[in-house]
Length: 377
Image (cartoon, rainbow, N blue to C red; front, side, top):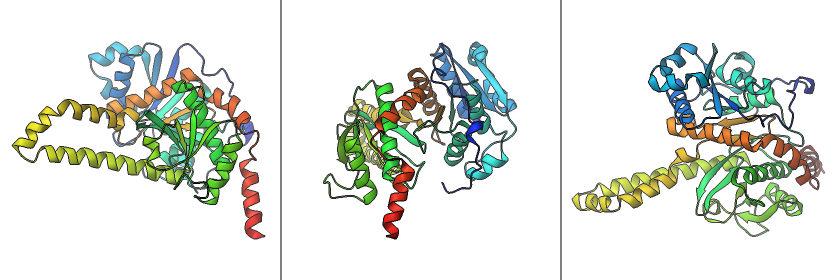
C-alpha cells in the first residue's frame, strides 16, 4: 500500500506483554459493520459461534440499533449475557482509501474493534471490512512485533495432505528477500502452534524447482532460507501449493493474492461445470443422484467457507480478516480462527521465536540498501 499513513511514535505503542492472551476466559471484538452484509451476517455468525463455545465472550462493534435488530429472538436471548455492544457512529466503506479511513474515521466499527485489542478489553478482533484499511489501521494502532518490519496475511488452503498455509496474500505487493524470510519465520511459528507440527516444511513459491529459476528477490530469499534454522525444503511451483507435502508456502503479496484468487476461480469453475453436466438430461441427472455422496464430499472439501479467515501476522495483537462476502458459516469460521490464535498465544510465539530464526539474515532495510547500491554502481 502506497497510501500516506500517519506515523505514531514508539512511545505511543500499546504496552504489549507476552502473557496478555493467556487469560482463562477470552473476549473477541467483531466489526459488525464490515463486509458486504454487515450485521445481517456478523450477528447470526456470532450466535452460531457462542452456541458451542462456553469460554468466549463477544463484543459487537457498530450501529447499536442495527445490531439489536439482529439480536431479537429466543436464540439470542439465551446468549445475551455473553454479548456486549459497543456503539459506533462511522463505517469504513469497502472501496474507501486506507489513509482516509485511518485519518477521518476514528469512531468506525473497524477502528474501535482494533482499539479494544490495544486496550486489552478484547484479546482479538475479526473484520470482514476493507482489507487495506484494516491492515493500515491495525498496523498504526497495534504496532509491529520486535524483529518484524511488515505484517503479512496468512490463511490455509485445501491440499492433498489436508491443508497448506500460504502467505503473504496481499498485504505487501513489493517485498525484499529479507521480508520473505520474516514471513517464513512468522508462518512457521503459526503452523507449529495451530497445527501442532514440530518442524513445518517451508517452501518458497517459484516458477520452477530448479535453483537457476526465479527473479533475484526469490533467489536471495532462497539463500536466506537455506541458511536459516527453518525446515526449508526449497522451491515449489503453483500446483505444488495443493499437491506437494509442504506445510507453508511463502511468496510476496502480489503473487500470493493472484495465486489465491486464481485458485478460487478454478474451484468455482469446476463446481459450476460439474453441476451443469449432471443437469443436461434425465440420464445425467440419474447419474448425478448416484454420485451425490461423492459430490457432497467434494463440495465439503472445496468449500471456501471452511477456510475463511486470514490472520494478519506480525502485529502486537490478533487481527483476523474475513472475506467481505462471507456468509454466517464462513464468518463463524473466522471467529474460530481468532479463538485458536488466542489459545496458542500467537503474538508471543512470534515475538520469541522470529528473532532466533532471523539471526543469520540481514535486516530488511539493509538488504534494500545493498540492492540500491548495486543498482547505482
